[in-house]
Image 1 (cartoon, rainbow, N blue to C red):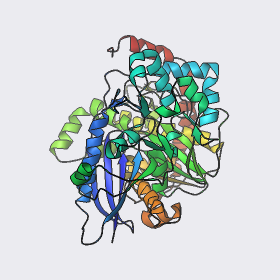
Image 2: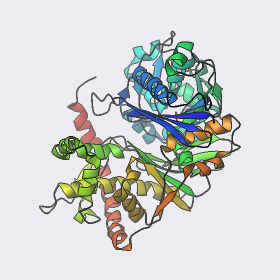
Image 3: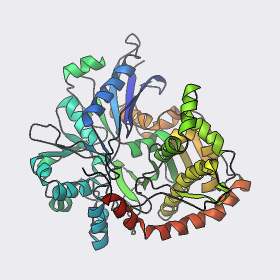
Image 4: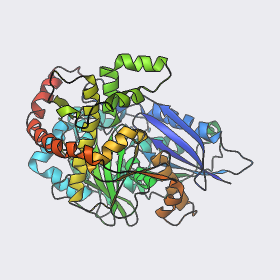
Length: 512
C-alpha cells in the first residue's frame, strides 16, 4: 500500500490529506494563518508564514504514513487563485502575497471596464474585469508603488513562490496562469498584449507547464524536516476552484459544483473555451479537453464569521466555554426563523463582490428591518443572502449551459440547514458527497493521473463514496420564489451608490 498527499493552500489555512492509492484517508492536518487587512481594501498574507504552514502540514500527515506498508509516491497541490508575489533578482519577496480578496486595484479595473479594454482583455484571457485579477494588481503597483515595481525582477503567484522555496525553480501550471489575466486561453501561452499593457516581459514570469507536471529535486533540508525522501515528486496540480470541482465529482457536462468556504463559487466543466459576451463568467483551461467556466463570489463563510464575531460575540464565547462549535449554535438559532426571514434581506457584499456583478466597490446591507426583527432574523438573512447571491451566479451560468445536477461542498455543507436552504433557493435537488476536503481529493486525483495510476478524471467517482441528496421543500421554496426578484431588483438599485459609499469610506480609512 503506497500513499499520496493532497495539499490545499487556502485563504486562511493550509490543509493536507494523506491517502492511500485507493483513496482511503490516513492523515489530516490543518494549519491556520492570518489575513492582513490594515484597511478596508487590503487583503494580504505573508508568503513565508504560509510556506512554514505547508511544511508543517506535510510533516504532520507524513508522520501518519506507515513505512512498512509503503512509500509516499507524490504530493499534489491545490492553491488559491489570483494571488501576486513580487521577487527581486535574488528571489527575495518585494511584496507580501496580495490575495484574490485585495481590492486596491479597483480604480484600475473600473477604468478598464468603462473604456472597454477590460472586456477585450477578458475575451483573450477568460478573466472578468475585477481587481482580483493579477493583471490589475500589477497595473496598480506600477502606478501607485513605482519603486516596488522597478525593483521586482519576477512576478509570481503564491503557489509558484512556495514551490520556489521547495525546489529553487519558477514554474507555473497553465490552469493557475489562466487566472491571472496574463495568459491567452486561445494560444495557451502568456498573452503578448497583457504583458505590453503591464510593462513586464516573459522573462519575469514563470515557465509554463501542465497540471500533471512533476517537480523534482526537493531541497534536502526541507525533505528531512518533512520526513520523506528528497526525490519525492511534487505534482503541480491546479487552482482550488478546478480541483474542488474534480474532488466533488462534477466532471461531466451539465454537472454544476457549488462550494462555500471562506469565499464561494458556482462552476462547471465544458469541453472548449466558452466566453460570455457580457463578461460575467470566467473561462480557464484545466487540462486536455477540460475547461472550467463559472463565477466566484467573495462572500461565503467569511460573512458567517462576521455575523458570529460582531452580532453574536457573547454566544461565541459561551459556546467555547461549553466546548461547542459557535457556528452550530448560530445555525440552530437561524433554523427557528421562517424561510425568507420575515422579509429581511441581506446583500452579503462585505468585501466587494466578484460574480455576477463584478463590482469591487459593492457593500453589504440589510433591507426590510422592522421592530419585529431580531438577531435571529439577521443571522438567517445573512445565510440566505449568501445563497441568493450564488443563485444569481447560476442564472448567468444557465445562459451558457443547461445544468443536469448540482453538487455541493465546503464548510457550509456540514450544516443540514444550509443544505436544505441551497436546495430550496435553487429549486433543484442538491447532492452532497461525503468525500472529505474536495480540493485535496482533486489534487490527489491529478497525482494519480500524473503517476500513471489512473487514465482520467473519472477515477474520482470511486473515491467519493456515499452521496446524500436534498430535495426542495415546496412549502419553503414558495417563500424564496417570491423574495428573490426583490433581492435582484434591490441589488441593481443599490449598485448605483456603491461607488459613492466606498469612496467615502476610503477617505476615512487608515493609510498604508
